[in-house]
Image 1: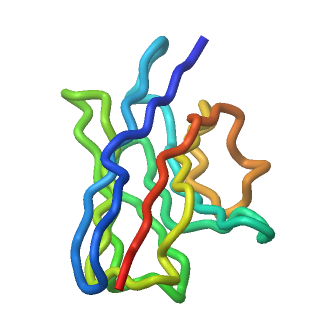
Image 2: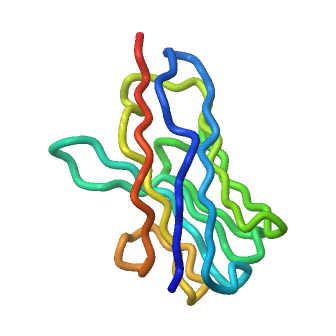
Length: 124
């Protein structure tokens, strides 16, 4: 069984930065592609970024490219999502997800393991 645990969420101010962590346990972490998604009430969950098992390939939502950076530490079984210049529209529950096919896709259906999410709130 694979477990994903997100951390690092909280309340920040407009313009601040925040780094989220996703720790993967229970399997061979290095074989998994990982994605970050986010969701606000009343809206569908949207893709933020994803990264391949090697960490050499990564993808971003077009609207978020340049403000968010995804990376991974295979020594720590952790994938990070750094967000900069945050604004109110970034307020959401952020989820990390993984698949064992090494497919860093943009669709939710690509991933078969999900974390519980971490709340990020950006205040003015």
